[in-house]
Length: 488
Image (cartoon, rainbow, N blue to C red):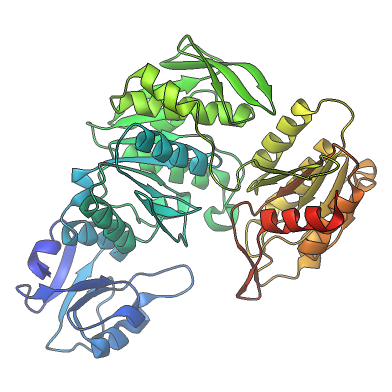
């Protein structure tokens, strides 16, 4: 429990009514979770406004309300605090409530369109292998040491995030590696968190349904680096067109990694095949278990971050060479009889899909066909749909357009939009099967010995969201079952 006056420090108070010398037992941004002694923070979200639930929170036992708009009806037994931004204040208040725990951990945030999950997961695995107790906050899962927790968002809300960090510190963690999505950055979910370092992977076409313009999306990512402290490090991919732009205004110590240019951390791909990657990193010759040029960048970023955190280069590379990536990222399964190779990957942006497919094409030994099953999510950025369709057809021999997470949209309409700008040659390669399981089964039936099937878009997800309901669905599990049933 903390006193209200203590947790309001630096929260940006504009107006206050009531006493501040009262005990707060709980923080909440959801009125349904309010109990006696709660400080309720009314946040204006994308789908609902917490201000409309202030009265419900008071009825449920809230003793303090943080808001942007002064409620017309105020309970004299409750303290009301008006601030400029409740979203930002939520992070600052949570930081104080949970004992400024981020200042007691070495937290590294990873942002970018692609590679966030792999980089954060590899850092977690690496530092665990180096003997540290670590925390992981990612799209796939949250993890405290060996304890795996479910993940509902790439980056949790500010209160849950600080609670997680507190639990990690209590469990003895020294390092935390976390993904920082563009949504989380602009929504101030990471406000108040003290980062030891931040990593930029790359930026390509994504989330324009939320950010509206590509410039706004770039600015969201850059904001993360703009607010780093002077005693942290900022690490960026110099080979990305906007890699140097990201660090223009940061107070943090600037470092870059590259496969093309001599810089702070230089790598070079020597070989890339189904057995893994051979690379030269800072003049060390190393074999890694991960595959593809995109993973060469991920590995180099992880190596650089580890060195910046004080680890020895040789120790880092020795451990890193033994690690596998995150679930649902170039995740492979091979059929038992005809050696058809299945690859499940989270690629859900044009650039990520192209990266995976070009890697597959490069790894082909002879005349294997590449059969791609891909869809686009509903209620998300529609502008990338025809681009995704074109990329799939350009780099595959056969393509099946299907459902991803259609959410509230009609899957058939999404598929039509994916195929709307295809050339006549590309159309000859594709077919549409809205039922995702049927699409995967059809891909298996089309495959000849040694062909390669890519199931793209959902990766680690264990559900398919249709009309507000999440139905159990696991691409890798379904593909494995079909392989076994078909005896391929």
